[in-house]
Amino acid sequence: MSGHSKFANIKHKKEKNDAAKGKIFTIIGREIAVAVKEGGPDPSNNFKLAAVIAKAKANNVPNDTIERGIKKASGDNGGAAYEQLTYEGYGPAGVAIIVKALTDNKNRTAADVRAAFSKGNGNLGTTGSVSFMFDEKGQIIIDKEECEQEADDLMMAALDSGAEDFKEEDDSYEIITDPADFETVRSALADLGVEMASAEVTMIPQNYVSLSNPADRASLEKIMDLLDASDDVQDVYHNWDGEE
Image 1 (cartoon, one colour):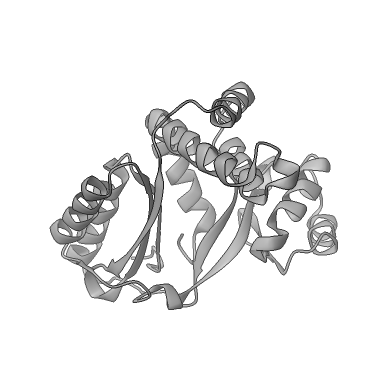
Image 2 (cartoon, helix red, strand yellow; image 1 turned 60 degrees about the vertical axis):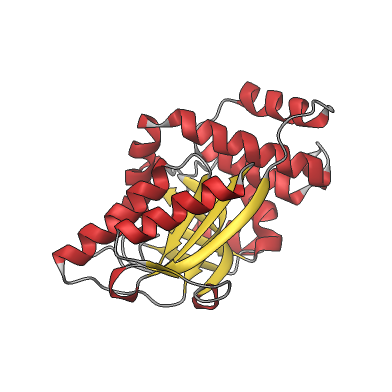
């Protein structure tokens, strides 16, 4: 996520998602399967599943697709066993990158991630090499044009339900929560009819890096595009500020 244009970044992601809904649905289907097998099919008693459902809805996954995924994962269908993996490394100019993957073939995924970093002039690091530079937080982004609530009312609703912070930007509102409070806050806003452009537990950089060299920006974008092309990659987090 960009530090200075979070909503623009989300809109860009959604445009890409619209062109690649198959991958989004596949990834979320895998996440649902893992969450159900770990904590059961009831989202009210399974925080991880509730978070995946929120992510699915923010990505316009139909309710019947979500329900089918939960039902399928609840049965002993002998499907693939997915493993969650995290890779950490650096892109050009020291941009920190975290890659989260969900895979049934570790060797394939590792090769994809390694190739992305290599072709974009980056370097994979060891576990913990960059994650200390990020904080895991619940993050909700709301498009001002789609929000019927006044800013003060929205802020009070968010804070009263347990949010840590509320920020107003030119085109959006950002709500930050502790991961454990994310679903409570998201549900409270949903009950008020608040439309959310994005709602997920994510990794937020503590500081951001600027890229003044066009070659560095092109290399970083190459890494991101190659990672996006891998069906195993769920999420990519970085601390580039997104500005020229």
